[in-house]
Length: 241
Image (cartoon, rainbow, N blue to C red; front, side, top):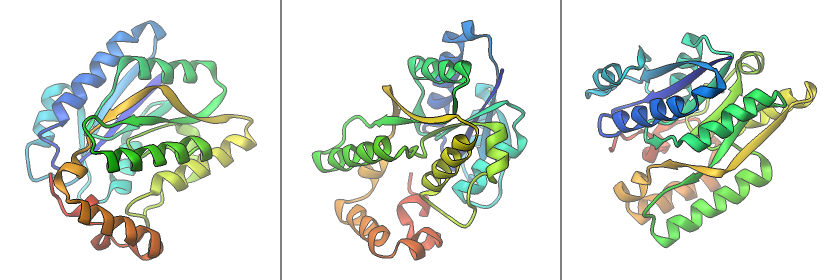
């Protein structure tokens, strides 16, 4: 089995090295599965040293000029040669036990894909409450967080990949399409929870509570306009790092 780990990255010079180190260490710790792998970093038009650092760490780097998360993931998938794709955000630390859970799921052959619950160290109480609410929804409805999405490569291609009209929350629609494909092929979709993925809580550090609240309100009251126009998604696209 050949696994493609795809990491979209925009101006991630502060965190990309740590992310890739965790990926390669997790792969090494799980070599007994006998899987081969490739690690692809999609430089999403960065203006810093993201691409240089990714190459230095041992990743294959490709370039996507349009700053758009769904396009970056799609470019990575187009370049990938794996039987399975693991989409991982560049501000994450992949632990070896979570990767073992993913590899075991792939080995068993009963699933079309998976997501993971998340761990964000150091959050204030209100942000932790939001994360807890998301976790409840994720597990209840089978929605993968964008920080980690696992899928069968054949299924990815047959469902048409990610919706390029969306600038955020494409992972929810993607999860729904994967589950539908899986159902027709008698395969399950699972949110892994035993070993949560550690991801950065930097949005909470970089944005005020008021900014986060306003973004949340835009998503609730104007979801279509907000998700289809990145000028309304400042927390994702204003470049603050």
